[in-house]
Length: 242
Picture (cartoon, rainbow, N blue to C red):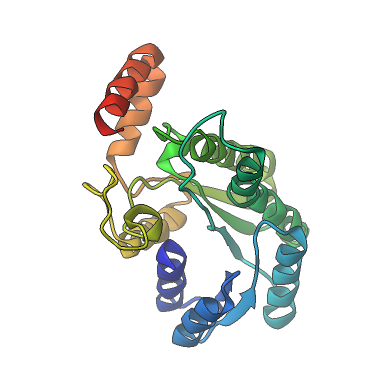
């Protein structure tokens, strides 16, 4: 759904030799794969054996994986330290460990041939924060940190890494099941197709940070320049929207 579906469609339109669509809801993966002539593989990204199976199936059918997109993510967990351990574990499994499992599974073949590309979907919340949700903010910061580490560690070995950090995107995560979207990020949000456009341009330029919302770079710069002032500003935002 959302960004994942838009990426699959755009990669196919760009002439990708093959696109493998992974989702734990296999019917949705199969529908997207049918649209673009791709391969659907049922995958729960929080389960390492599922990602190993995904990599094995893709490699067996197409010979190698040139670009692996770690895109799955969940939100919707308001609160902070009081959030139950089980909820923290669930969001860590999808928003953080899935990136680690993917790198562990696909990097050996990429390193062996001296080339490959990892696209890690994080969030602007990983550069800034997510008011009202410690689990989302913390896990997205961790996703950005892991992408940074991968780029630093393997960049001189032929491995390219990009970290996608959108702000509001008009998907079910932002708009909710009813599509009404009362989240303050709805204003200024972009479509999944606009995110895919930014990704294609970012990959072509081999940019580490891919920012579909240009203002995020400005916010990130303000944070780095005067952290205390930025925190005070975020407190005011929190008081306004929560």
